Image 1 (tube, rainbow, N blue to C red):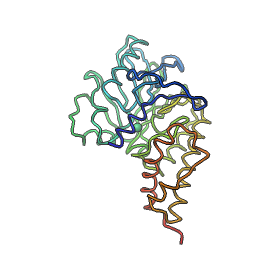
Image 2: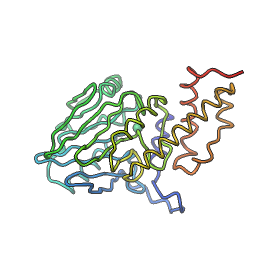
Image 3: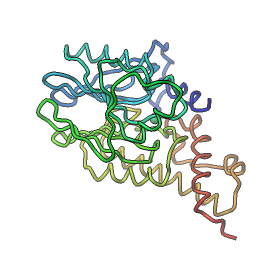
Image 4: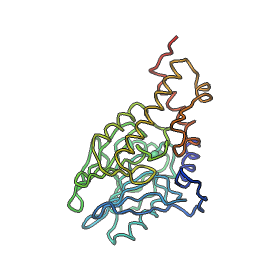
Length: 292
Ligand SMILES: [Zn+2]
């Protein structure tokens, strides 16, 4: 239930932090397409969109590929419609970057004629749900590269980070990276299913790819410095959690007194930090011993 609430909260409009903006009417999951290079588009959440995670569209000679997450039936319909406005070619592959366990209203309603590519961990998560899978699945362990439209679309299984097995998509010729929910530009993001220490390492790996433009899970198409800044936030957050654990603070005490003032202006701070603190405290408590 908590994740459901968070996912709903995630669907709140993405607006500038600098100035209050009137809340647009929620109209459904809508995406704004931004052409990044020939036949490659960022599909970012439109203001007021009920979709909750950005997507990537790559158009080839005979078919298109869409990568993304949190795929409700409505979101999939919106992605199909957005793609159809750009190309008459069909979506042959969806890349499902991750799945949040326990939620069957997402990631089960792909068109029967599309194949869905995912990490083995995401496959296990889907196969463990109560709903049957009615679409063809391709899953992989380490990586998989699609040749599409004369370019490489490199899919890499990062392993545990935002979920048990997150996939990123990289276009090396264009230096374009789609991180999905490993990176939230300007936000704190949802960490309730996260593996915190692995996630920090994943962020450093993402930086090492030296992408020039990065499509985050939420927020606008970003630059490397934005990823560096998110990594700094993430490290500061964990450092603060460790300080609480070293003082011997209980989870309750940590939740009550936690402060990270220099990052307070990040989008979603008030909504997501309680669940993020709980996740990080619980995981790090296994390895950090109080200093008496
Ligand atoms: Zn997610």
